[in-house]
Image (tube, rainbow, N blue to C red; front, side, top):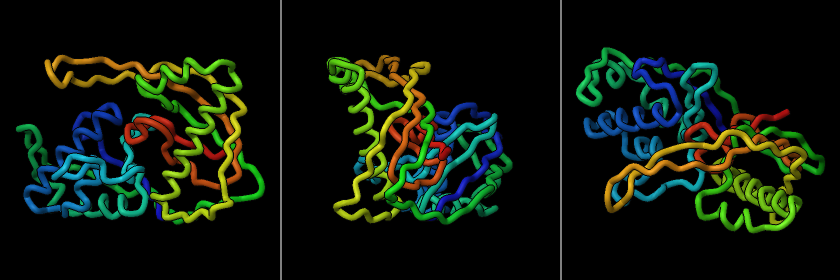
Length: 243
């Protein structure tokens, strides 16, 4: 599996992964209209088909992060090719965005690695930062589960499902008897994940608050640190650290 991390100079004035994703999405869309980037690559930045507006991947291959004040893009497989398609002076120089002219957008590829995930007989320890497992509907059913142990089992199942989604994106073929079994050893709530959308009918802004957790767990697999797990992983939530 191919993994790469790209650094984006904060020339657009973005201060959060969601703002960076929005700015990069708008920039790439403009370049697609100018035929400076292929559609198959442009769509990966928003993970939506431009014609149907439906998601094109179950696991986003381009994810945006803010790390120590730096804007980063974490990419795997085709997402790397999409990012590299921007590393062209004709694409990055003298472009406009929202009516403003920019002289240059600086993107550098900081790291590249090839690491194959593995199913193992041993367990390895991981930390999951700011993991968002539930939306407004699924959190209601979670809160109805009685007993902390049963609630933890539900979250373990969700982590397992996300690891399976990642395996598809990584082209990691698991055999039928190879079942990843995460076991949570520590679970701590953190500040809610807050984001806004607009009402489909009135257009009014709606603020959403979703539960976030820092989680430590063991699992019978080796996966690379830096992958995103759970909701809003394209915006920097649920980043996995290999301990």
